[in-house]
Image 1 (cartoon, rainbow, N blue to C red):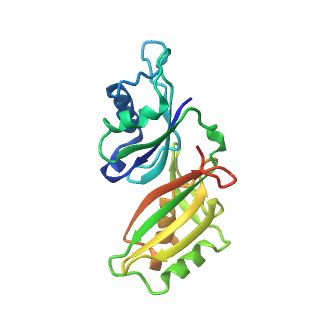
Image 2: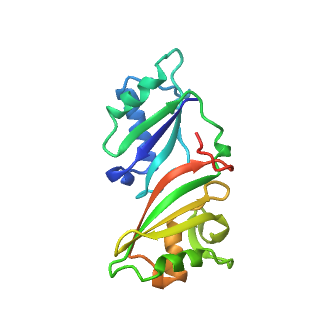
Image 3: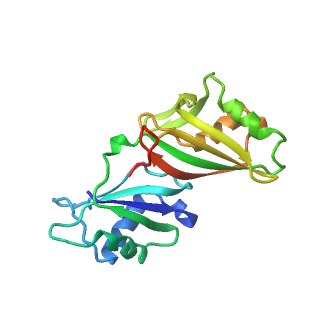
Length: 221
């Protein structure tokens, strides 16, 4: 099944996963790209997005799989331009491949958190934050699941982490975390600071997904 790499930035971060699916299905139609649909009373387009992105977060490494309708032949290199001509601002197809790897091989993701402090970032805070996340004690954080709220120890899911001050009121935290089985939303790192290290808790945090990876740290495509 062909696969697209796309970015979701700017105002597009507020598009929910279900609405994003509809946006792409409409873009395929407007771009003259016929997609295969399931049979039955309510046909469904063969379009799927790996690792749905939480609303409000940016990404430059989203993956979308699709299947052309039977008999449709379109040069793969034309598809990104056709879609980009119809997609709204903030959504941009970066590349396309004729076949993607099996999604179970996607195990980790790299992300950057921008942490903002209204009263200025504490002196020495970057080193203190790295030390906090590298402790070997449990780091429980509430997480909402389909069955309700549960407590999750996120420390084993943090593979690597670094911090650097980027301004008098901002810090960038970059991390590599588990993406599947189990998965960790990088925003929970900011929540962990609020709960367990309030002196370093930000007033505002935003997440940008940078890359998806396999178990060897190779970009997943």
